[in-house]
Length: 269
Image 1 (cartoon, rainbow, N blue to C red):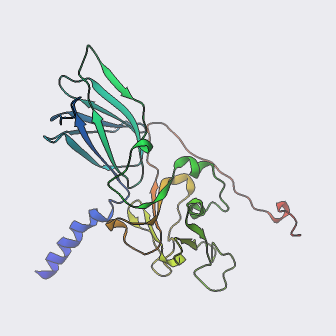
Image 2 (cartoon, rainbow, N blue to C red):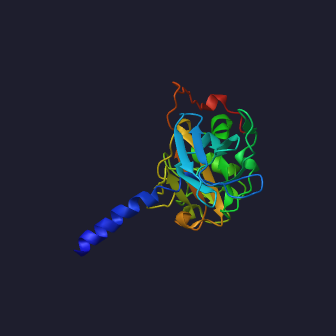
Image 3 (cartoon, rainbow, N blue to C red):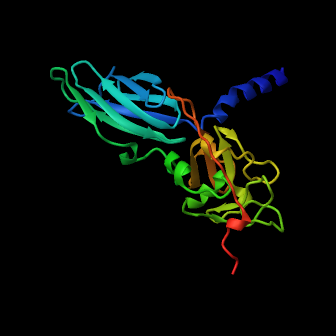
């Protein structure tokens, strides 16, 4: 009986482990007098896939749409007697975004289009400190060896440290095929915690990045340097949360060539 209970508890907890890479959209819908609007229809559409998520505001005017992948979205809010409100926004990996949406009284075929970005929204639900490495940076910044972890060094508080093994030939990659040694917030390189699509991607022996995905397959990743939330308490150093790219409605692919030849290097004066 105890085995059955323990197994059930384990299976129930599995979905919780994979939620840290998803974003959550919270919001409040109010009228021009700042009173809650109950029963407003909220529609969130992914720009990349056209996937639609819907919710309704409750008697307090609040709504929540969980389980959202990072990316560009358009939100539309409709309620009887009010003009339709649309807004474009961007959700980041693991973000808890809260929007205050104010409706205006309806006129004939009226629509209010708010030109704003999620960056303009004050974040009050999360005290964590860090930065998101966005798709543009992953695509355009140069990488030595196509090692994704190099981009962690662009975050304030992160710097190159010594490898996880004594006598490392390279301070960043302490042996071929193994990624390591970024110190975040003054902590040891083996104090970091890595997530890939919500699953632990930390090497159990050296506490370094276990599987380094190709930069072409990564949508974005977040590097937390302090004040972590409870689901990111796996280590005392930096928390690196990587999310891979999803499909879209358009055919796409990438081709790359990587060459490092000593004949092309500068002379070692």
